[in-house]
Length: 331
Image (cartoon, rainbow, N blue to C red; front, side, top):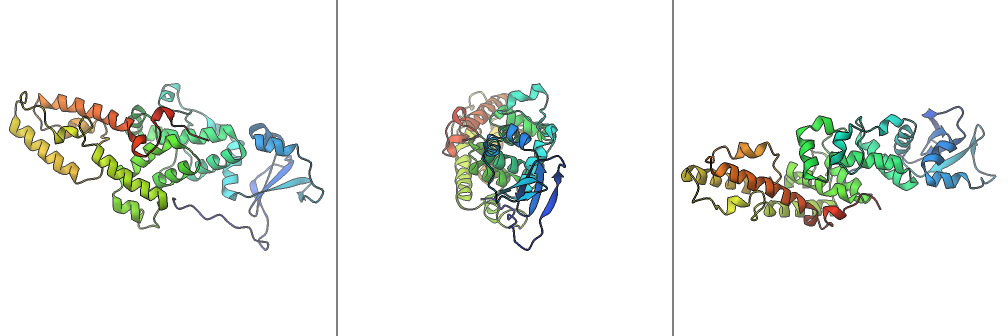
C-alpha cells in the first residue's frame, strides 16, 4: 500500500491538548490521541447516524468529562478528526462547480482544492461514522481527479487547473490507489491505475518517487505492473489506438507510400520502446500523424480516436474489475 504517515500513539505522560476546534457552548468532547475537540452532539448527530445512535446511549457514571462535557475517545488519527470537524463546521468545503461540468462526474465536485490527507480523512471517517454527505463530497473530489468517462478524462487533461480538486504532489496517484482500494471506491481505480502506468516506468513503480521509500507495495505493486504490461500489449491490437501500426490497410489509397511507411515504422519503434501510450491526449493525435499523406492522415486519426474509446472501455477488464457501468464507489 502507499506509504501513510504513522498515527501518533497516545502516551500517558503526554499532556492533553485542546485543538482549535473548541466551542465554549459545545456539549461533548471528542478525544483522538492526546488532542481534544469540544463540539456539539446535535451537529454530530445531524450528519452521522453513528453519532446519532451514540447520543442516545446512557453515559456510564465513571465516564471522564471536561467542564461538564462527556469525553468520547476515538481510535482515530487526530489529524483525520481535525479535518473531519473542519469540514463539518465549514459547509463551503462541499460547494459544487458550475452545472455544466457535472455531466462528467459521478458525484458533485467541490470548488476549492483540499490536500489529499483531508480527502482521505473524509473518506475514511465519513465511511466509518456514516457522515454520508462528507464522504460523498470527498469521493466526488477523487472522481473528478480520476474520471469514469473518456470525455471527463479529456476534460481533465485539457483544463487541469479547472479540474484540480485535490492538491498535487508526486505520490498522489499511488496514495489514491491505496485509499480507493481500502475503501471500496472501485470506480476510481481504472483511471488511477492508468495514470500510474502511463506516467511512471516500471523502475519507478518499484523504487518509488524522488528517491523516497517505495510508495506501492504488495498487491498494489503487482497489479500495477501486470496492468502496465496488459495495457501496453492491448494498445497494439487491431481496432485499438495503435493497432494500425501493426497492420497497414491503406496501401491502395495512399498518395505517398514511402513517407507513410517511414512514419509508420518510426512510430512503431518509438511506441514499442516506451510506456503505454494508447490513451493519447486528443490534441496529440494530429501531431503524431503530421508526416502521413493527406489521404492516410484523417483515416488513421479516426482509427486512433475510436481505438482510444475502445481501450478506455476495457480498462476495468484489464484490472479484473466489472465493466464501467457496474463499477460503484462505496460498499
